Length: 438
Ligand SMILES: *[C@@H]1O[C@H](CO)[C@@H](O)[C@H](O)[C@H]1NC(C)=O
Ligand SMILES: *[C@@H]1O[C@H](CO)[C@@H](O)[C@H](O)[C@H]1NC(C)=O
Ligand SMILES: *[C@@H]1O[C@H](CO)[C@@H](O)[C@H](O)[C@H]1NC(C)=O
Image 1 (cartoon, rainbow, N blue to C red):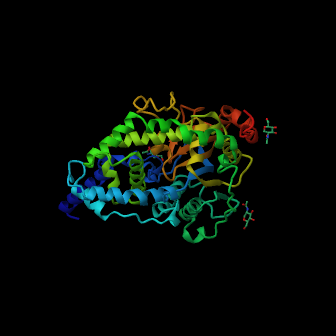
Image 2 (cartoon, rainbow, N blue to C red; image 1 turned 120 degrees about the vertical axis):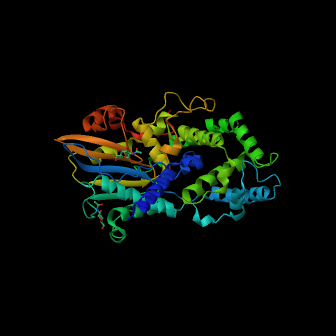
Image 3 (cartoon, rainbow, N blue to C red; image 1 turned 45 degrees about the vertical axis):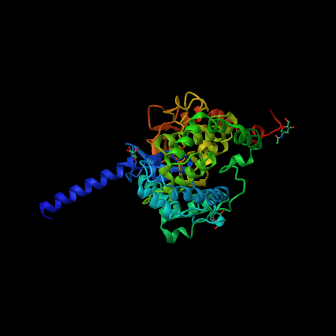
């Protein structure tokens, strides 16, 4: 290689590198709520995680399925509302303008919904890749755990009763063992109401007294009717050169479509993202965060208390007296991941999220875009450190510290038992979820 071509390579390499980091063009990528693609939050390091004097021995992990298609309701909304808005935009003489550029209009011109009702909630290509790569990185980080050939006593996989978690499990297994061996992996029959993977389906009290109520009259509804959202509606109409043809329902469908299309396609930009400013995205994101805070998070004690069967499963899996399985990996849903995070006391803000404190909560920890993206995962890894049992916690493949161990990555197994003893000793799921008992 000549000096000149070397320098050229160097410049090109630098330029490409820089542009991967310049997410400025797509600032919305981290404000998409639960539709955020995993690549926006993951840790792409393949390095082995190593502590002096310690050997990793076991892992317990829960994984939200990868990027999926929208629900039936969302697909219908997209099909019903978006073509009309698309037409309004394309026929609008005020466009292009400073916000909606010619290249955005080109994207609008080419846009159409490619989804059928039959595609609802299915895992997408991006979701397959998310699982494959996640498994490969985890294997590289913990070679002492994932070194064994496949056997169903060493590896325990389970998924919920859904195509997206089943497919997620298959692609994760392919990442660990290769596509060929993955076909031989044994999975138990999924349960419609799995007491560990989707405990909340069995909790009548939570379903009726919390979930249903929050969906009808919760904080996020109040926020949706508040002045911040009114501003978003006004701004979007103005940006599109419209009077007030676009209403809240339209705004929401455009927002989720921007989210889904961003998650599905790494390369191309969804035209529906271009109608929002960064501030609009932040307001829409807060509405999502409010919803999940009150339905799946810290809003009500029962919501996270009922995660004790899953927590207990983790503790007993990592108990030193059980040598096998070495890896327990569950494929489940957002509702389980969020309740588990709250059960552990992670991402807890001093103050509750409310419809009235949007500004004050700007730097909140509870941000679904970061903590509940597609493919979100929470892993507990057991290390044997000269005979002491220590647990390392990873969320989105990044090390997080548990409340009992704020000063160290590794947390003594017995310290965890002690700190969460209430969860372990008082896990009477039937009693806490008994709806007649108040
Ligand atoms: C990714 O994980 C490694 C440990 O494997 C850590 O050193 C690094 O800081 C993490 N990267 C980010 C961006 O958090
Ligand atoms: C292993 O797979 C067989 C079916 O091939 C099943 O009957 C058995 O319960 C599995 N064992 C474990 C530990 O999951
Ligand atoms: C639920 O609560 C009622 C009244 O407190 C009690 O009679 C019933 O046995 C409880 N059911 C279960 C399954 O615990």
